[in-house]
Amino acid sequence: MAGLPYRLAWYGCDLRTGGIVEDLPSLSPTGALARKLGDATTLQFDLNIPGAASNWDEATAPGASLLVAVDTATDTPVWGGAVLARDAGSAQTAQLGAATLEQYLNNRFPGTQTLVGTDQAAVISALVTPALTGGPPIVIDAISTGMVMDYYTQDGDDKSILSCLQEVMALDGGPEWTIDVAWNASHSGFQFPLRVRSAIGVQGATSTTFDFPGCVASYTLSESYESGKGATVVIARGEGEGESRLTSSAHEATALIAGGWPRWEYRYTPATGVTDPDQLDAHATQSLTLMAQGAQVWTLEAVASQAPRLGDWGLGDTVHLAVETSPRHPTGADMTARCWAWELDPGADRVRPILVEES
Image 1 (tube, rainbow, N blue to C red):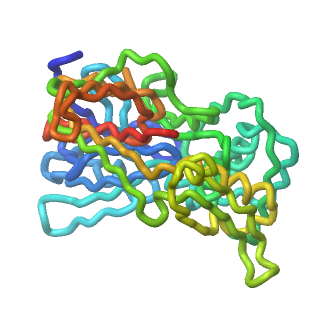
Image 2 (image 1 turned 180 degrees about the vertical axis):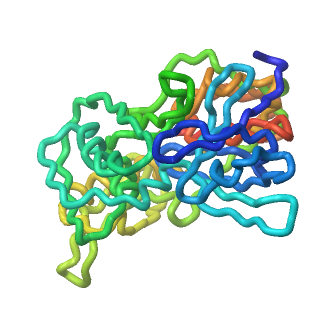
C-alpha cells in the first residue's frame, strides 16, 4: 500500500448497537486522529450541513451516536469515538466533539467486587462486565495471562471502570488493555473488541521499519528526568494521614545508585481506595522500572503515504527505527521500541508513531 494516501470514510453509528445510521462524507476532523494504550483520546470535527444527509442529526446525536473512520484502501476501521458535544445553529457548519470508548468506561462503574486469586485477564473482564449492559457493543477479548492477583473495589468508592482498569495496568507485571474498532459480522456496523493481554501487540522481531532519511520526515527523542518522569527511589502511598497512612517500602534502583547515580526520590498516591500493601508495592515497583533511567520517548513524523500502513502495525507493537545520520545521532541509530500511541493526520499526509523505550 506504499504510495497511497489515506482516504477515510466516516460513518455515523448508533452507540448502543454499532449499526451504521448514515455515511458522513461532509465530516472533517480538525486535528489528528489518535489512539493510546489504556486511555482515551478525543477529536474535534466540522460537519458541513448543506453537504450532509438529511438524517445527519440522528447520526451525530451526543450521547447516542458514535463516529467511525475506515481506511478506504484497506477497508480497515482505524478510529471510533462516541459523540459527546455538538454545536450548530445559523452557521453552515456543525462542530462535533468525540472521544474513544475508553472514555465511556469513565462513566460506568464496576460496583462492589472481591476478586481473590484471579487471573489478571479475568479481573479486567469482571470489572468491565457491568458496562456491557446498556452500553456500546464492546466485546471482551481477554486471554489468560497466567498470573493471578487480588483486587477489591467498593461501590461507595465511586471509582469508574476506567480508573480501575488503569490502576490494574499500572501494577508491576499488570496486564495491558485497549479498545479496538472492527466491522461486525454483517459488515453493517461496528463492534469494539476490548483486548486484554500480558502485552498488547506483537513484540520482538518486526518487519515494520521506519527509516530516516526515508519515510520519516523528522523525529525527536525526548529524554526527561523531571519530577514524575525520573526517580531512583520510589514510595507509593495510600490514603490517610500520618503514621496510619498505608505506605509501600522504599523501592530503589540499587545498581544505578551503586554506580554513582544520585538519589532522586518520588512519592505518590497511585489510586484512591487502595487498602492492600502488596498493591502499593506493585505500583512502586512498576514506577521505578519506568522511571529509573528517566523517560525516553521517540516521536516519529512520517509521510503517511510512504510509511508502513496502520493495520500492518498498531498499538503495542515493536517498531524499528533506522536512522542513517542526524544531528542528534551523527553516526546513526538503530533501535526498536513499543508503540504506546499514534496519531494520523490524513490531510497533512502524516502519521506519528510514539515509541517508548522500556528498561
